[in-house]
Length: 323
Image (cartoon, rainbow, N blue to C red; front, side, top):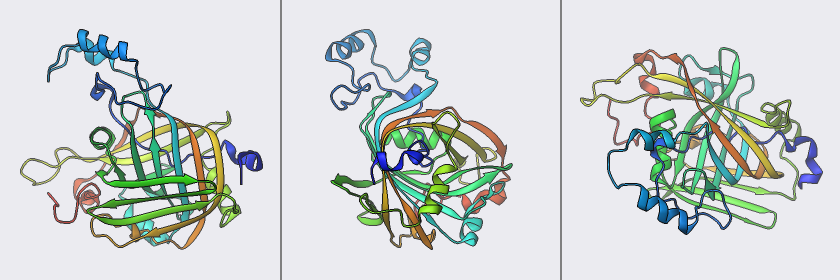
């Protein structure tokens, strides 16, 4: 199914693009090379100028820090495959930390993507697993896992917004109407997503409702994520501070959209237990190319440390649980 065949849903895609990439303070002077003509790759002349004007140091000046501030972290030509499915309500209820509550429908979704150009000099692959959740009546997405293959992307997402990022190995490719991707860690492949873009949704009505849940009146897509930001004390006795529920929005501008029939395979893994989010019914797949803008987040609640403790291991492996 092509863009022209689904114009009514074109503006609705994107609730999955909810990732934090890197704090502007962490941006490097020498940018990674992106695709030709992209916004993320300065010319050789500008790189040479930056090297001359910026002293090399572990300590940054206030002027350097201020010059890196942005209102949003931007991604250009982001290529993503998203698959949504229905899971069991009791699974979502077990996985959500208070004060988050299950959303109206027991839905989960995952994506695998490639970010070829950014405004912070980093290009990388990323995947994520979300379940629908609600806070104070506002539905969004709670992130259970977010593998990446770039260390700065991992550090920024974990340290600023609390996204549970880990380093991983990726495959992601589109050949004709077929899109496929998988993620591995420690040599173990725990998720595979694929889509046939010539075939209809697995469940057209449910998939369209999933897409409608994030559409805006001006034709953009609003992606709302909830994460819990927390850090362990040096003596592993508990948390440095009360865990904080973070609310963050991403505005998505899809330039190309194709939809179709999805398949999803989740394999057993102690360290990356995506298979816990059981696939009861697949809704469908979306393949998009577009520009994403990550907006600043805010702390909306503090969480009781004892109640949150069982949920505090999303960013750790099973053999290292520091508290």
